[in-house]
Length: 127
Image (cartoon, rainbow, N blue to C red; front, top):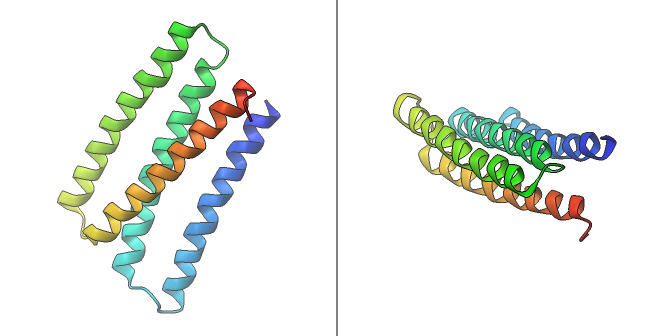
């Protein structure tokens, strides 16, 4: 269980480090408030997606193959619909920079998927 907490804590610090860098850029007037707001909102949405995915992986890791597949792939479908709804609401009702928002969603989504795959490989013993 300490590997899980340590791994998840490292990823959380990674995300906070990136968001703190964006906050510093805003404080030093290098980026506008709209860019910062778009970045933080996209970072929150993708981090929530990652946390739910990580929870579904840890739930299914020690279970049978069927339970593992249902928890991981079922969780992925639910997470994708949740992200779709949150992105749609954000784009429709919030005043954000669309280009920045979509780019950050894409960037963090890919990074978090690589991290989830890496974690699965670590738990299986391939790394």
